[in-house]
Length: 328
Image (cartoon, rainbow, N blue to C red; front, side, top):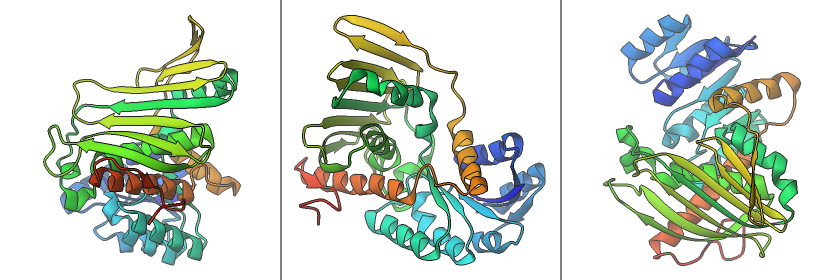
């Protein structure tokens, strides 16, 4: 069984711990790290593993064969550097980093060390999203997309402290959409026009709306998100030459629309996407196969975040995504 060390035992990290302990037959939780020693020791005792107050000690532990990182992304570069020095595979929670420069540094560290690494863009493992992928050939060449993630305010106070979070909803939720449009279209986002707003937050944005252009210039997408609403939706519209797919990944429905006719497509029962991401990570290590979500994938999502923030700072003017013409 693969010995996993988990860095981070907050709200999200606790999900990782539970899935590793209860639902991964090919892996075992051997060590955990948390800033709060009393809480970390309590959880370590409950999961019958060792506690480390310092992530460097956890990474150096011989029983730790792979590392899972579930901490605020501003801490990722230092943890990735230590893990790469130890030569151990790692799964990094999204977003990969809080800035493009930090994401590029992580990519360089991983590349130079040769360690196996994956970014936990867990929405890829949502059953509704996978149903959309399976039915996209039925709507023909894709012409336009619309994605909207609107949620309730976050209970996590640190997300609105910029020094800790690095940004607001564009960074922490927008990366889901930015990753999905690359996955669904097969094209890179090259240019964006973005506006942000603060409805209830004080230091970071909690709402945004963005139009983006792709490496296929005939394809356009509109992406929106908010953490200031009274309900939760995850709407997609994919418009193609032979029909539309209307989707909500939160509520688990997919409609195929042709003309005025609407067909409800079957969607498998939902599963915990964090568990599925963990399972994919462990399988890739066991089988020696490619990571299903690469460091490059994570970096491209952060590059779009970077362009979105540059556009918003200029009142919604066009901003090129790094790696494409016009980018700084």
